[in-house]
Length: 144
Image (cartoon, rainbow, N blue to C red; front, side, top):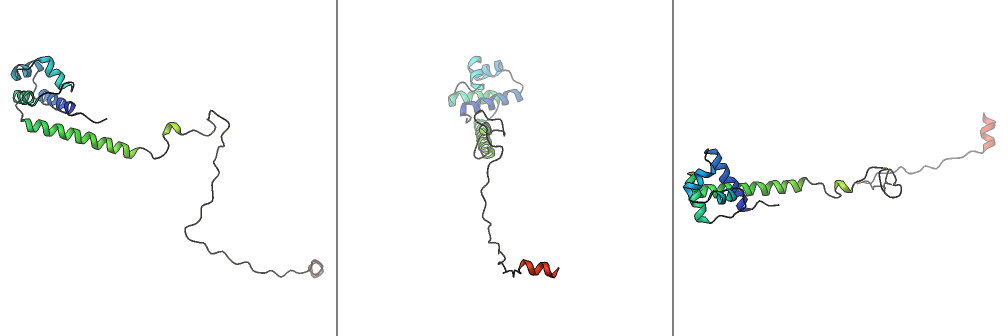
C-alpha cells in the first residue's frame, strides 16, 4: 500500500523534532497548537493545513519546503521499494500453490511429470543408413 502524504509529513516532523531534542509540549506551545493534535499529525492520523504546517515548521526552525521535500522523497522511496518487491515476485504459481511430490491431498500424484520432447534449435544431420549385404546362414557356418 502506498504511503499517504499525511503519514510522510508526520514522520518527517517527528524525525525533525527528535533530532532537535524537543518535546511535543515545547513544539506545541511554540506553534500554538494543542499537544494532542500535534501528536496526531506526527502519527499521520490528521492532515494539517498549510498554515498549521508553517507554524510547526517555524517552531522547529525548519523551512516548509525542506519538510515537503523530505516527505516527497519518503513517498518516492516507498514507491520504488514496492515496485522492486513486485519485480522480485516469482512469475507463475505462488509458493502456496506448489506441492511437494507425494504430499497432495487428492489422489496420488505422479512423482514426476512426463516431459514432452523438445525440438533442437538447429537440425542435427542424421547419418543415412547404408545397405548391409547379408550372407546365407549356412555359408557363414561353413566358413567357420
